[in-house]
Length: 183
Image (cartoon, rainbow, N blue to C red; front, top):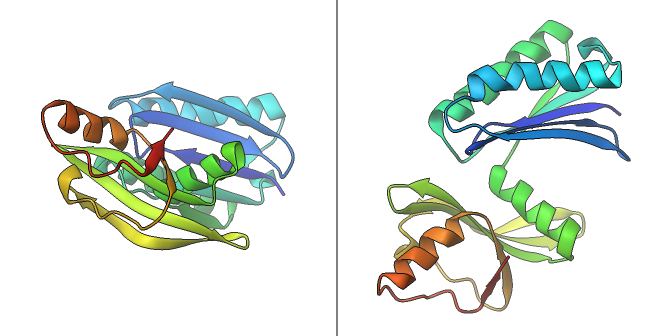
């Protein structure tokens, strides 16, 4: 099964092409250049693999939370490519994707994810792996770091939102997340 996956919901523009065993990836810090980077990155990966868009089995895109403009770009490109090649498309939660990456890399099954939402807020969720599916123990939300709910027990934390929390603690704010081992 060949899948094209990309994410434009954060400051990075990331594209991956692969099957169940091998993936080729491109990632570039984009700021607000997602619209100029995404399609050339997709073309490059498809060309390198010698695959036409119509030979894919599906498209996955990062459905956020994240940058409003980045989400619109990612969703629009996914819809346009899927329509042109008659492919199925699926949105993937950015926060859940982080949890899966932490599990794949470190084996963690209880993961708190936090992304910087800017303006002193974070996108936040807590996921626990049950079998082969992630279950949200704290549903995705956007909050100031001081209002983020604390899950019970020991968790692994991942995402650039933990830098927002650390900045607040350094400025004299209380660190309520001592039981989360941030990566």
